[in-house]
Length: 265
Ligand code: APR
Image (cartoon, rainbow, N blue to C red; front, side, top):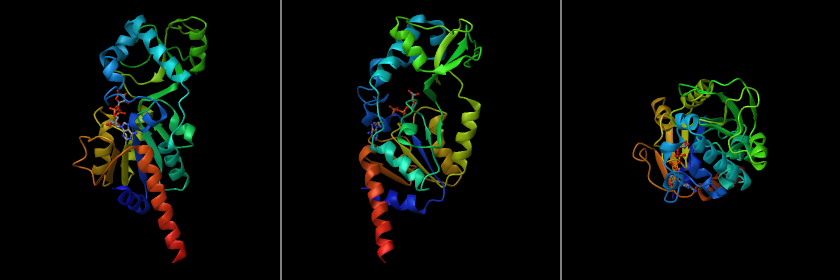
């Protein structure tokens, strides 16, 4: 139910933007945050704010352990990520704005990906004691493997090799300001959309969760693919209840069938 309507919306759209959350990566083995058994059912989100990371070596050590374990598990894109890359290649979507930091959209081949909550693929110096929710580092930056090699050699909280400051993944934590250039690109994509498809997000964390409404206010239709209800379901033009890794391949099949039918006419 809903895949047929979504395929029709996609086929008619001139500028479809997809907005994803942790739910699109659960079928790659990465737990989401607010489902039963999700990350926030096992850890307290108040421990993962920017200021706690700056103040507490224990929080930094736990954060590095969690990142390292996820990296070790080597998650791969699932069919949902691959369908979005294929739809972009076909010109049916213009890009993805993702809240995810796992890099799986890029691994699947998506080219225009706006990582509104940053990425865990890089690490950077945030300085010795940044006061506000904005990194104030010396400029050191490296691929995340740099940190994992040090962790494997026994370091628990590797300091900046240039200035001795604190090193963090390039992710945006609670209480941290989003990167202005990323926000600007997400805003431009959102305002230019005539269809916004939100996939695998509980749509609860702002400002990111405001993107679907901003798109609607700019005239876009809103479709939601999620396996649980969201606060925007009533406002959406279409809600497809189901798992992204099943719904999206089904939508592609519908689009292909339509194309085959129109070719044979
Ligand atoms: N298919 C469709 N929906 C799914 C699937 C799936 N395979 N797996 C989970 N979901 C749904 C869940 O039911 C839930 O509604 O995806 C949603 C995920 O919601 P959250 O766990 O809240 O994740 P997200 O919306 O991305 O969280 C936003 O909160 O903790 C912060 O920074 C973190 O970026 C994150 C932000």
